[in-house]
Length: 375
Image (cartoon, rainbow, N blue to C red):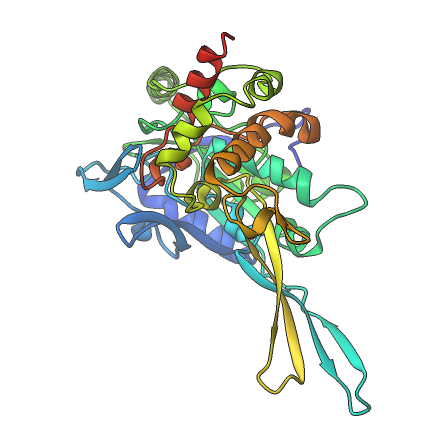
């Protein structure tokens, strides 16, 4: 729920040494807290109980097919763009049971729901691109008349602490998609990080309740000027861009373009791009029986349009090769998503570039397709 426009918006400066008061306030409100931590040489969302858990002093280098962390000695904890995770795994689970079936004493099948009962979850350090992705996932999973109860239960208890991005990676292009680097109001609290602490703004009534419990000080003119400079620098630092507008007709007009075959020669069809994409939602459902056949569990698990099974229908694989699968992904993501959701499915986070093992750059492929198609 957004803060009422007529009510004062809680805003102030939280000294770095007082960051744990935010975690204690969230804990007191019943939230489990996750935030960025260094794990397996990457920044991942993990449980956090103190500011000391955050990746203080860590920066990242990202390029197509490359991701590296390095220590810089900076006091900052959010001097990086994004790790491989977004919010998606915490709402649309990679694998979860939908129901279980078993035979009763008379041999009749009985079905039992396995709907989750998640605890409220606070996520620290959400980026603007991931808020945009969340809005798209909400459109898909919370659609009126076909709401996904598994997603909805997790979404209901979510508290989002966004941090405005000041260190975009070389793979980022959220400015061109209109989704970053500054967070809007689709969250609960928004932080701007400075060396000595955080400017805090409440963006919802829930955020306002938490902000009231923080020892906020007035934001000085010097602090605000520094925030403005860093916001401007983050917006102008991005060198990659996605062509603006609805690309649907341009891409469909390039349906038989030789570029699709050229990119297919490099693409491994591994599905990494769809796994790290914060908006992709393809999945499959499988039944796993017990060894004695007395019961079975029906699972939903992430799938990718790059797999052979994804387009297998009644003995026919509609997209039999990497060329047709890459084309399906790109034309759907950037074209027909406009028909379904009113916008592109790309939020410019750049994860599909970084985590592609052969470094395929979606912005480069689209530019080549449009340029060579004469658009």
